[in-house]
Image 1 (cartoon, rainbow, N blue to C red):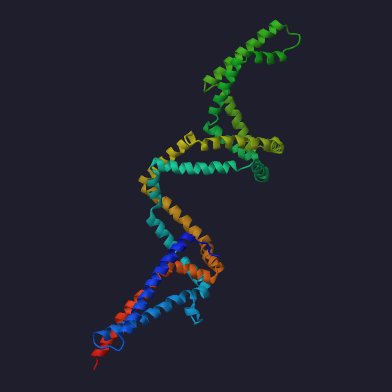
Image 2: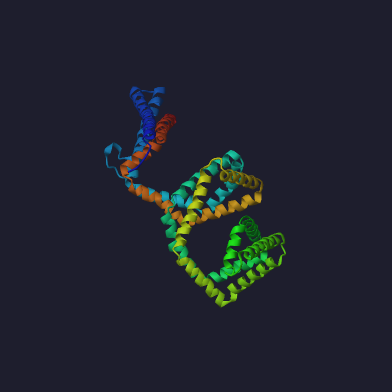
Length: 415
């Protein structure tokens, strides 16, 4: 069954009927003129010859146009009703035509090159209101997508994809290489600074907790007064020591930590015993049931934060995205070389899609037409092109009449 716009089809049918009426009216007019000027000479003889030829041309072209869609007068004349009988052949021909003339690499590349897609998109996105419109649409879709991800989906992904892959991969070389690069570049210093600041603040704000812990380690026979003095002194020195490490980037404790981390990285890369310990630690972590629960909790926290930010039309996430998109678009609009690179990548992607899926795309034409009913397909096509085809009948009537006059003139002039 062919699905279409019923209101549009009704309007096309009215237009078709008007043109058919005009073409038929010309044929009837020619017939009336022919009958009225029959058996006349002189000028009326020319009129009679033109009217006769007009009728012939009109009827011949009516037959030709009608034969495309149905049998003229219902008579099963050979080579008529072409579309109902040969719609499948027409579908295959249309499929080949589209594939050979539209889905070719040179055609695709030339069209994309002349379209200047990246430049036009960049100019359009350079306007903040356009960039905001794009960001709003993307944010809404992303938020909906995040909300549709369920806990069981995350758990399944971790159990079926992440955990088996982590078990197969050796943790020690990866961790060792990462730690070695981190120590070499000093990336851990910021983390150490943060830890020292937090530790110092905690020691200052919780002296009772520190002295209580130290007091529990004192011998039972130590007098309380002496124990309190010692633990208080230890706490004070501990606060000073942490402050010294915090304030001195070249402190010996920092260097000792760097040395320890470097040694650990080396052992993780080359020491079998350390590597074995790392693998056992990895297995214990992966076997712990809390891993899945913690992963889901982390995902949910991240998802809530993202969805809340994405749903907020005036939030920081959307505002930042609009700023970044606008800035990139303006840069792209003024960088011809970057435009050419992006257009080349788009052309490569389009050519790849055409090469890989072009047959399937054009095959849709044949598969769709194969499912159509022949008569219904003819009716549908006639609604779309039949009005224009009526001009063939009109032109045939007029041209036929002119040719008839010309032939009659030659006949009169010949001896």
